[in-house]
Image 1 (cartoon, rainbow over the protein chains, first blue to last red):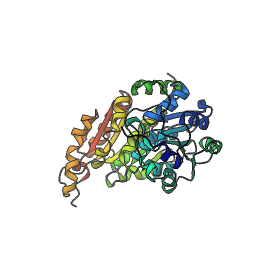
Image 2: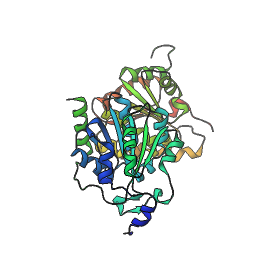
Image 3: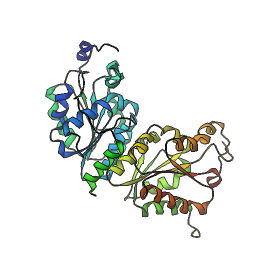
Image 4: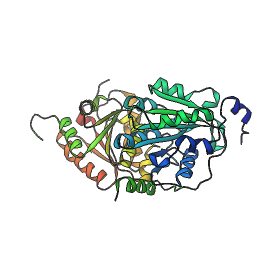
Length: 203
Length: 171
């Protein structure tokens, strides 16, 4: 396994601890419907919500989180929808940012928890450790409300972007490449679907 | 079939009567009328994708929110969806796609054959039921059957709009 270069990560702005920064940015989690990517972000949100019925977490089908969130946001304009994805998961289907931009639903935001690494597979560096800037890609895709949060000072503005506004928002949260919360969530994708729909739709 | 009404318009009306509100697609000549109808329809979301697998995930999200959608794609796009269909199969999401076929009956572009001929086996391998339509009068009955299989029985179904129906492209 590759050794993690924490000094290089810090020099590139990957400083915050996701275990504190993700909850701080999201605030009252009951205000959102969540779709998460694999591994790290699934654990972040499952731990935050105690694997609540308002979250749909993935453990496969990499690259799908942003688009599942978009479909949900279009279906439920009365709810705030937050897709929480990692840098690796987002990069696998980065064209989804362009699709979000042209639809631009006001009740939708994407939070990318960017640790610059593929944590689940042994912390190999991802493209964002090597110069790729996901906020610039989102801006280039046409998303108008974007922000990169790298320090505690940026959390309040990031939180506002996730919750308010007249179009979709994209926030990159740069975090140090350390483990997400240890939390054992439900891995059954069909059971999670039924749980989510029962809570949202009743019956 | 009603006289003088294009099957594509009958198909769009059928989908809307069945509460399909999300139309996801990569622009395609075979689906032009459905795409144009969705763009002009204030009651529908017309979602242009950069790659077809986005549409698979989009429709799963629609289902989580209690809405229904359809993925309109060309046969080449079926290959772009394969791993994302893990979400559909594993999550037992309802899934409807209409596939305009290339690389099939009378195709003149050799590049279309590898994926065109692989559409049925690869979709079936991922748990998608495949129905074929070859004549205009079969479109509405077949998609009606598919709608029941998907939204009542919870299956994943692809309806292949074949080149016998659409006409082969000579290029």
